[in-house]
Length: 308
Length: 281
Image (cartoon, rainbow over the protein chains, first blue to last red):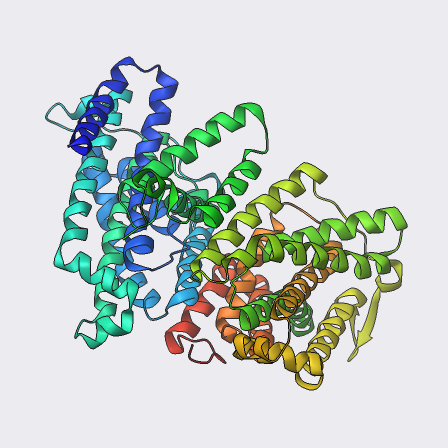
């Protein structure tokens, strides 16, 4: 009951926030929503399947570049470009998933990292398409027909992003509770046993990898028109590490945790950067402390029990 | 000519990746902070050389200092995690990489630090009728010496035997009355010291700068994965392969060079998911 009430309060707060917040806070909030979606998508791999991806920036960057290119060159409307970015990312993720899931454990982590770095290198070098080190600037928020111009305002864009996050959250909640979701947990806990029971772990891993890429790509596709640009940094391993921090600090193996982690991460970054240049130092120390002393993350602490 | 340059680069990469390999092979830890410790070695080497005016001292002292730091880090941050799953090490060492990188930025500032090639190693020597930079020859020789020394140490000495035994069965070694904790701390320190040695040796070529750790840690991981996690010989072969691909890539296909080593890694893993010399875990 308390949970339902809390959810209702959060939903109302999220709905009302853009109407009362000053612009810079609205911008920060939109960023939290986008990165929250990104972190949640990674947790499908890390928390629910036990696949430590170190290259999740690959899908974020790919989604961002896809959406940016669609908006710059085709004149499709904003929602189409964003959805298109997510779909393209899921498509590129199929061969990636096929290759990465050949390896397990650390090798899997490093393969995902290699793919992200490979895309980074391509974005950096393929100047005619990607703009090289400058990236793609001036990504427009092209309005479509049917009054979609409303989404192009700052407030409208926030609602668009928040709508995506809520839809993704509801979808993921149903997904992890489904038979497929529980099989993923079984694979996480004991892959050999799952295999002995007649499941094909690799097929499930590929499925969740592609789904995670779709949602991560969606986050990236939301980011490009939000920021107005896409740069090679979106593929860089530092971003992959940061989103992993969000997941772990928030609480791996939960859906709300990573969203909370993303909000915490950005809040800390904005807050600390006012006081000190070296906010990353504090962030790193906080992160180490969480791994050492609160492995279930902030959300796990709030709920008062370990991750299932 | 390009072949010798590739060997020099391979030697440098080997120094860095062998530390990772040792730490993984013996402790089962993926040390993401390895690049940051390499960077720390480079900056420490620069400072020692600037104070004493001696590159030789920098080469000797900076790795020792970083090894000492590594031993402290092992005790404070890694030791509480041995009972947890492997992912925790990946995460905590990533945090360490962030912290060390920032600490370096605070301590030395954002500007790159250039260390000149020591006069004794400047100039070039003639090999097979072609001039070859002495410093690169020095890199190649040092890499080879370290490889042979480490191999002999692990294969022939009692301590080496102990270390290998610890990697196989820590509990048994402990039961035989050996302090496994000391062995682990020592191995981690040794790995960090090797990374720092690589850092000091790289500084005259690339200058100590804030991005160097990031670039190198990814290269080193590529090598360790190509060679097979924890394999000594794999580290050598992987270093040579990456050194060749990078050197010739830069020479013939500069646009593709950046991507070439990742493509190499992906190709190797498609053929052999465990790496060239990897064993089944």
